[in-house]
Amino acid sequence: MTEIRIENLSKDFDGFLAVDDVNIAIPFGELYSFLGPSGCGKTTLLRMIAGFEIPRSGRIVLGEQDITDLPPYKRPVNTIFQNYSLFPHMTVFDNVAFGLHIRKTPREDIRAQVHKMLALVKMEDQASKYPAQLSGGQKQRIAIARALINEPKVLLLDEPLAALDLKLRQHMLIELMNIHDAVGITFIYVTHDQSEAMSISDRVAVMENGRIVQSGPPDDIYERPASIFSAYFIGETNLFSAEVVGLEDEYVQLKCDSGDGQSFEIDSTFHFTPVLGQKLTVSLRPEKIAITRGKPGNQDDFNVLRGTIEDILYLGTHTQYIVKVGKLRVRVFSQHKRVYFDEKALDWEEPVWLFWHDTDTWLINEIHEPDQGNINPESVGSIQRGKRAGAN
Image 1 (cartoon, one colour):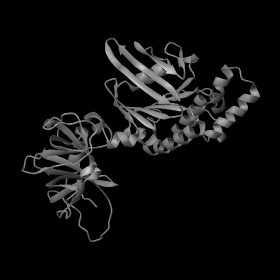
Image 2 (cartoon, rainbow, N blue to C red; image 1 turned 90 degrees about the vertical axis):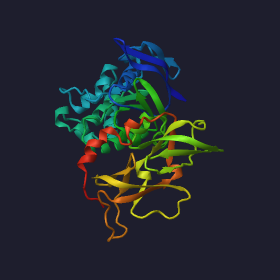
Image 3 (spheres, rainbow, N blue to C red; image 1 turned 180 degrees about the horizontal axis):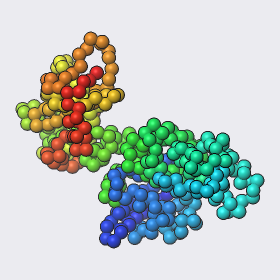
């Protein structure tokens, strides 16, 4: 059963196209996220669902009802904003009860429903406090309770955890998932934080320049990015320019030239139909690559490259190595573990071997420009600061 259907939805502001011909269908009870950088159109899309913005074209259907032209107060939809929008002069109890008072619900029913909702968000003992007396996480819970008490069919969440610190955000993500499971309605979540979207969502829509460039389950988007933008924005990746040199059944053979005489071929199932001689891009996640001093033995199912460690960045749970392979710079994540206590850590400028299973790559039907490099530009500054850092 489809809860929300968005058809050919577009919105512009003074000639700037914020949302560009978006089409999505969100099933009933799903936790669905719009994910993308600032300015990609995700919040504008959410505001059109809520009724705060009017589309230039297209329509929004909730169940069987076209709600495109309905005002916000007539839509069975509630929104939680980044700043919570609690009434500072009201107690927690009165904040949560506000919507029921507007609907002229009997006093006994209000009391019962408010206590039930406060129990759901684990705030029963805070009913008499005012918002100024609450922490950020507590305010968020009250905002959720107030939004849910009117029993909306859809709950919209616009960057609801952006104001919280990292530990509290992680805790609130778990609470949000538990609340979603308990109430069973459709949640639509907007965020620019990939870790939030990946950990909380049933499905994710990745947005760029007002359009949805990829949608699907989080693991599908991470393991099988549809574009260079998706590969870069979701997690970390290495991108290699490649040429198709062979096709056989469900496999494609690729050649990636590092510029120093080394090249490698990859057997990988593909999600589009390549042709011989085609130029495309290979995405390879850093955690898929093993890094060692010695050359690996059995190489039948592995791609192998030799290089030199150029930079090291210690990141607590793992170490990030930047390995220079000819003209390529390959990013490798190595989880910290001590199997052998006398094992010596890899060091800067040390020659190493890189290898990975041939199925751990993914093909992208776009051409990767060589001047983009193989490192996410946003990370280069922190990588340089990690030079000569120790690693376990």
